[in-house]
Image (cartoon, rainbow, N blue to C red; front, side, top):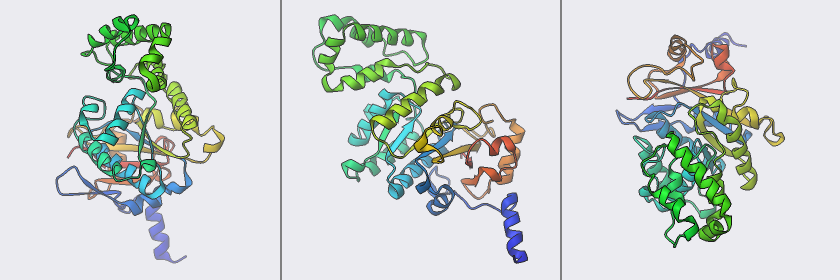
Amino acid sequence: MKPCISLIICLLLSGKLSAQCAATYIGSSNRMVYNTSLMDSLMTPQRYKAIFYGETHNVHFEPEWKLHLIKHLHAGYGIKDVFMEVGIAAAYLFNQYLVTGDSALIHGLVYTDHHYRDFWQGLYEYNITLPAAQRLVIHGVDFERTEVLRVLAVTTAIPASLQEVFNRMAASDTLNAFDPKFEELLCYIQSEFRAKDKEVKELYGERYPLVSRIVRNDCPITQRAIPRNKVMYRHLAEALRDSSIQAFVGFFGQAHTTYNTASSLPNSLKKEQRFAGKVLTFMSVYKDAYSPKGIIPYTGLFRMETMASLYNKYMNPSCRATVIPAQQADNRKLSNSADLILFAKDYL
């Protein structure tokens, strides 16, 4: 092997050579130029049936990056199924929005503020150009939030036996998802709908299966990730089976996607025969996430100084984002956490 080639390979493996940009800046705006060819070579999407992006739920970089990644995987590989860390009710409303463009449908939902407004607008504009059979489908697998009340609302006459349930729903529109009163209300709705199943079927008609799954809400309402992983995976597996999904992309917090957590969604999915060797995951490391305050430690498993050192080592400062194979990361825990590591600046 020629000495110059050997030197280049060594530099690449050591991370000392400036990495190519996975995304570059467009002036001072939140927009970016997404490097499709580089991401093709890093991901090789044709080899995988499941691509998980482990996010931090920031509202600057991730909405823009996710828009590009979804469009890339759809346009290049026909991946139309998008899983998100939301409940079934939210996913239903997102899908309604992607068809109608009516922003009132998703107002106040999780992942709709700040630059997520641009995300949903861009996704809608892309989606309406597609033939109906090729349009994007959002899937929710997490616990239900207060948008349940919006989806359960009806414009038809309410049976007398269900009137009290709807009265209580109407009086609870100011609750938030983590309010104990909201969880109590959901339990009450479950109990009443179960006891009056015949009337519920007649009231909702063809929407009954959707309503039934929403009201079931068997995922714990908690901000802690580990207690939710098992139920989220069951919902994911049900959606894959019921909708005959062959390939998908999923966006979840990193505690749901890391290989370092035994119950994570990728670890559970890899046990399925048809997904063995067909799962790809990202981990993300951000500078100035949410505000100019530095790097957010990854789910509490890394010290701030460790993240800062790794970010400074692998991030090309002229890039909005840099992506490297995880095995190149000079940190065993980090390299074992995912297949690809993204380094990016969030808040501009």
